[in-house]
Amino acid sequence: MDGNGRWAASRHLPRLAGHREGARAVRRTIEAAIDQGIGWLTLYAFSSENWRRPQAEVTDLTGLLRQYIRSELAELAEAGVRLRIIGETARFPADIRADLRAAEARTAGNTRLNLTIALSYGARAELAAAARALARDVRAGTRDPETIDEAALARQLFTAGMPDPDLLIRTSGERRLSNFLLWQCAYAEFVFQDVLWPDYDAARLAEALAEFAGRERRFGARPG
Ligand code: IPE
Ligand code: MG
Picture 1 (cartoon, rainbow, N blue to C red):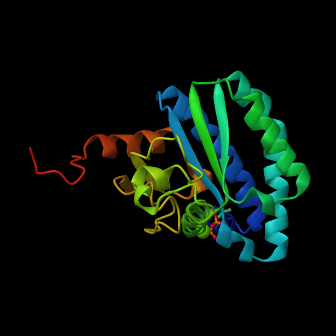
Picture 2 (cartoon, rainbow, N blue to C red):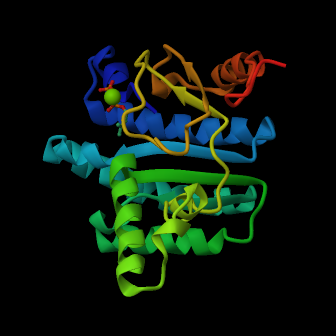
Picture 3 (cartoon, helix red, strand yellow):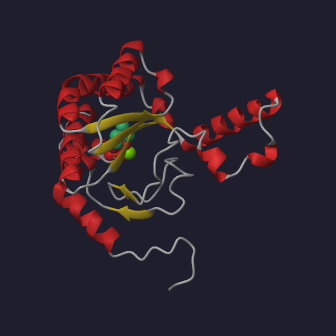
């Protein structure tokens, strides 16, 4: 979800206004995803690298996150959304961590939309942590290195048990992955849209889905 700052700047507003509008776009997009029958939606809300932004902006984003969970949880739960958080959430204040855990627990029985929010997420850190966990098992004598295959590594990731993304959408005209789900996106289709995130809506999602539907996916196999 990219372009909040540029959206605000183009209106001579503070960046926080862009992030606020971005939160409204999150709400619209979740509704649109449900309407489209999408089963899994993962939103990259805050990267490991975003901690390096000016302290005031980090505080604004943390505040918005706290507000978002408190104001949206009941409705998400009601709509049949199951919430999961991926990322190094230990870096957030204790009250937010508690709210996130409670939200995951409250929605654990829902099946309509699996909504994952990536918070303080970085794929390289995730992969390094997986390697450490496997190495610890080997050192403890509970794992034979020869059993470390793709499935064993995938089980150590935040996304263990989740399907790999079919489609990755990046907004605001940037054409980068920015350390998002590097392992999981091995065969994802990428769609880049120029729209700034605060302007994202059902029509933009439908456009991305239409582009995805036109792609031929071979997963490395010979054209059939
Ligand atoms: C995305 O918008 C929101 C977060 C990364 C939290 P940006 O803040 O990156 O907006 P731009 O890229 O400056 O326009
Ligand atoms: Mg950006």
